[in-house]
Length: 314
Image 1 (cartoon, rainbow, N blue to C red):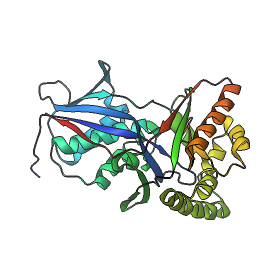
Image 2 (cartoon, rainbow, N blue to C red):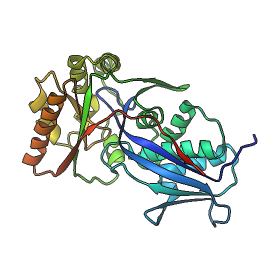
Image 3 (tube, one colour):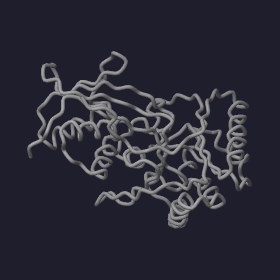
Image 4 (cartoon, rainbow, N blue to C red):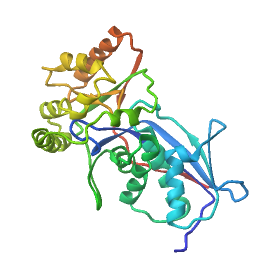
């Protein structure tokens, strides 16, 4: 395969929320509030095959999702050119907003463009999600699909790899509560708390809920969405990491105009409503819970985002 080659490209990938309701490792929503950007160039005079620089500091390629994607694409397509990456991180790290997936997605998009490989969105998403094993110990594709495709995605099959992508109803509004909590190897730790097996009754309920999740995100049925977001099975196992989940459940148990769940592996909370004022009220109510627990936080209304792309060539 003969590859075309550009000298330099700049790519961008947005943040995302995943593990929505029962959509563990399956569902993701892309938001444009935060993004990672990287400039990738061919630098054949450098002394190592791949160099990644962030804030004038060189990053260990073997422990970075962007580095993992670049190395894999070099291997698959027998690329011998040496690559330099200048990474600008705009997504808060360790907040459950898909920062590692976005870096991987931006790298995949950039490599695809600079060498003219012609990978499909599904192939780019697969490579990006596979790189998550660097940060979490195992591959998963929910955030990666959302960052590559944009809007809302469901990773409906891994073998063969398939993604369902659709627009979230314009009647829905979203917000993020970001508690200032630092947990070492947070995603790895959060995944390690989950059981290898669940009861059949729970599996059946999850099957119903994930179907309802897809339908309610499409049509804006807030009553249904609120119910299924609050039925996130994995959150039950992660309550030791995030004890404030109990307080949130009590606060929103009977509120049918609000849906909420952990965003990704936490600690952030994704909140949804079909009424803008209700969303703001719910975000403030959730913020009060964190303040009562003396946990610093920030919050942000979120806007649905587009998929990763090239923002500059040359």
